[in-house]
Image 1: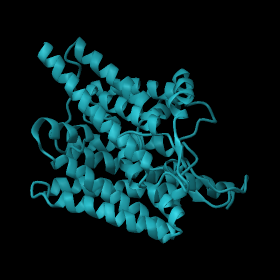
Image 2 (image 1 turned 90 degrees about the horizontal axis):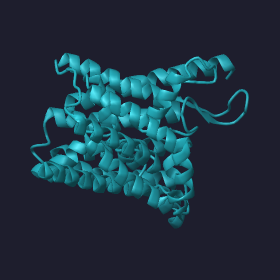
Image 3 (image 1 turned 180 degrees about the vertical axis):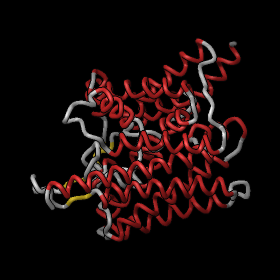
Image 4 (image 1 turned 30 degrees about the horizontal axis):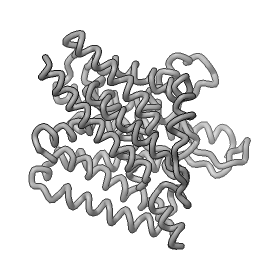
Length: 370
């Protein structure tokens, strides 16, 4: 492969990622997919319907990811979730901060992008603050604090933090078959649980669960197969095209918000290149915008009061810091991470749920105090 062909493939990867993200945004807007909303429905109304949608999406993505790995299309070891070092404190603390933040900011990172597509100026403000806080935690002053404190607390997992790789390592089983078997077991159980409710079995809920799970799977394929080059014509090394981490990636929206703002600020810099994360941010907004026009739900939304503004700003900052510390958001760890069966992702998601519950209790305290 020469440089010209490599550039063409890079462009194809970016367009494919943009299309997959637009589908994600379209479906999320149409089905009201929201992790915070799912937790809120359980806490406030005792309804598990939206959580079943979320579980179905995880199940489909999980089976899809490990199915492709079993076929040899992608390499599960080439994700950020496969590292052999489990930074459990970062995942837990970051998850709690993110969970509190998404309640205060009226939604997680993906929901923020979906709301921007629907006309929310509140969400646009959250986007900028969250991206700024994420950048500071990625490589700024907060990054120094993060690396020298919570990131130092960890334990090693031989074979990697992904449970199939660890199990294959300690048992001597084939990694691909172990991953497929475990994904069918766990993912199948999640699907059975989701489908066991008559309230869940509606076209909208099925579209949200199955459709978003397939969108995550598609991004794994785009990044891990379409974007994989076994031998770069200049470095002669294998490379994953257009990714922020240099590894195989699927959807995640905390760090990409920071990268998107950086790309916009340094647009004229020749070294400033588009990545799948940046185009995914734009794709989700566009997909949501199209759906909001189709169902005539698009409307401008602003802050109601000073308190409303302050809570959204605080929530955005907490999501930016927490999402980077936990290595992902409700989508980055909750859908993409869990699809790899990563132990770190499990810890991060538990932290996010705990943080969301704390956030709801804080909101109730504010209401009672008011």
